[in-house]
Amino acid sequence: MDYLELTINVTPKEPWTEIIIADLADKGFESFVETDEGLLAYAKSADINAENPILGTILNETEMNFNYQMEVKIIPHQNWNAVWEADFKPVVVEEYCTILAPFHDQSVITGMPIIIQPKMSFGTGHHQTTWMMSKALFEVGYQPKTVLDMGTGTGVLAFISEKLGAEKIVAVDIEDWSVENTIENAERNTCTKIHAICGDIDKVPDLGYDLILANINKNILKAHLPSYSNLLKRGGTLLLSGFFESDAEELLAVANPLGLQKKGSLNKEEWCCLSLTKQ
Image 1: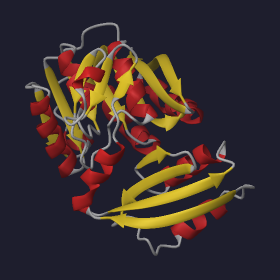
Image 2: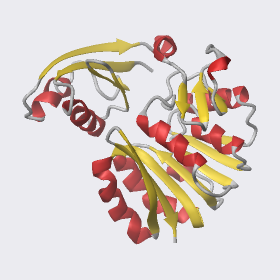
Image 3: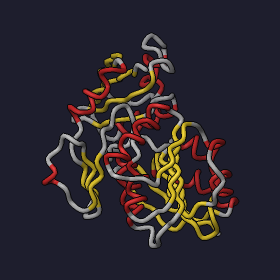
């Protein structure tokens, strides 16, 4: 599958970069990389055609006073991995773990090593949301035995869960290449307790989970929250990310009536990670 890469250089960079990312996320862009000049945004080219007027109007719709330059290009499926390798640097999540690729120098490892070959999947640890979810996993405060990882991407959170002691992990993603990537990366991390499934929330086995992880965009999280509440054991933990601090109250307004109460939160560069517990 080809991907569309949107390069936007913004002056001034702050706060407009975050505003643009939020706008693009609502319009179908899946992942973002901040640069010194602005950002890179990625979406499936099948979803957003390069000739689509959306690309010409996204920034004008914000009606903000800034200057920008925008460039669009298509990244063929077979070249995506090379793009990741060129930019993928090891990610250290405090003292807890280091997320790195097979081609990195192993001497940089701090804490638990998580080895991934990212390919086209989201979840290298570079994005603020994956970093926070990784940190939150180490700080759950008890040992979950059954874990559901929704939108698993590269499988990073599933691998951390198993290495922390989880006995059964269900890793779900709507993209078949993400599921393949998770299976390949599980071998690299000698993880054997992960069941990778291609599909959406309706494909999740109703096992009763001690911990549910969901690093997805806000609208999908809101739609999934009733299912998460049903699947989560009483006293279990739900970790959510993939949204901005400003969206947290909107998610809590949906979660609270479902018996999901806020236990804590992390914030990193305007992004948020919520920890909820089922009453």
